[in-house]
Image (cartoon, rainbow, N blue to C red; front, side, top):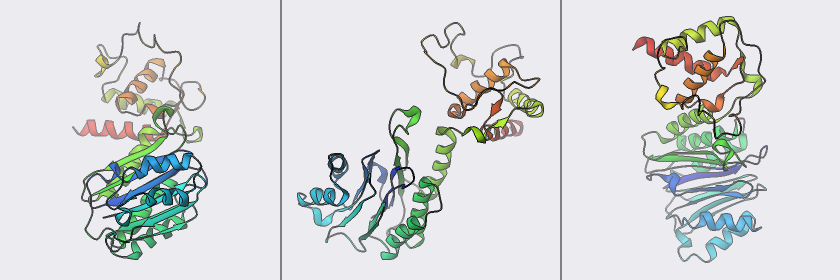
Length: 321
């Protein structure tokens, strides 16, 4: 009912699992990963204990092959199970029980394990493996491309329902608080892989920070444009009265009282152009907070191009309303 690829990015050490199935909310069952330890897919009458137990074995020093052997040897239903593991060194193993529904099987190579059951045929797993081996894309997009290629070969022969993508890296989660860099689940959708790709693009937009060399300098012309667009959205600091979302913000006297430091921004500040002052900068940041774009905050005098694109789109939408 499921096909998956478990993989390691040899350039960064990131570990991940991509999976698609004719099964509700496959992301709640199949993918498991821990940064610096390994990644696991457990499927086919999935034994969800394989996830935490397998990660514990890897953390204790077992390689992928040894972890698969330890997990399956004590499982009385191992004949119905399927399992793929990649450890932090890129060693891989895939297991398919003899009683898994046909077509079922797996394929491994350096840094990946691909497997599936109830598939249209062996070409589905071959597509997972060969797409990964071909590379040429950033790791998250590559794992989604593996699913696309497998689906093109017939995928799960019962159809489509859900998909998931889990990628971990040390301190890669929101605000650096955990290792869940990307954790996306499409639980029930006619095109779960396409939806997964759309959500991945939104993840890059909302949860990632730009690099300094991506930033656009604020000059007079751009400042004029941005003032006009913010004004149409109700964020003009010169307007009498409060902005649209004023109740969301603390009183000025109490703002930041319990904070030891400011939220980080990207780049080094540069002089503000004529017509763009601290008040307009504050309203830009407030609008970005409402739009969940705060991770893309640039130092004063700069703007992230994706934030600028969102500002333009929002203002144009407001104009059409």
